[in-house]
Length: 295
Image (cartoon, rainbow, N blue to C red; front, side, top):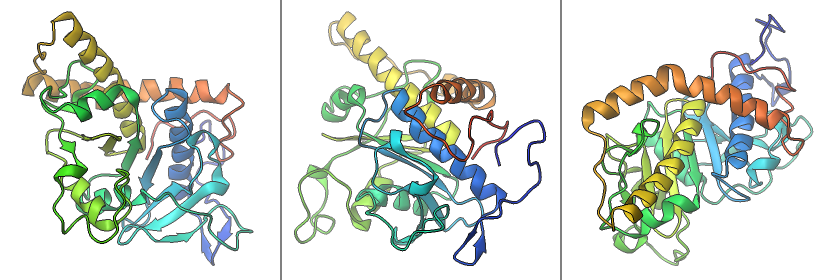
């Protein structure tokens, strides 16, 4: 539960859902999920489209994300628990009166298949961020880490391209709209990740970002967008010559700094900014400052 000054410290959230108690760790993860949804919109990483998810801290075979709603409008009542195995909706853990689960995001398979493949991933962002699209669409200019706050890009971000998928993935009447609507496509996307990069660019579409926590993945998504803007400007200044990436040691050292001191500072600022904007309602945190730990 993300409260400070001893507010309800050590108390288990007592809402009873489907015969089960919602634990303090689940409430904390859900609180961060709402903050993440609002921050991603506030920072222009997502608009009405896009989504973020977090692995269930109590059950690694499940994850939480909202049903199909604009991220800015997410509240506790829109949070759905999903099975990672097949991206099936289980319940609405904070809506005691729900009798049905509203329509899910068709691209929830991006999240489920990334969680399935990478046990150390605890949060995923999918966004159509405009700044990254040129690098998703132009293969002869690799997208590389250009700034110290974007080591998650790595020395060469991989690209997921529908046109290059085998027929066994594009089965039956698969729509050619670039959406990752099923397990086969989600698995193909998850397999596109490379060890040294936490982002996959998606041709004609956007990006998928993985991270060890939801706060870290939001930090990564924002600075991936910033990195794209800087790299495009660098290309323009250099007459189209692709800039060099940070080297391997620089990336490792920048990642250490980002993970130990930078993302917590950024998160505390961003939560304050969304708290002051009436568009965003985090009814789980209700204006209390975020805790020092996150999900």
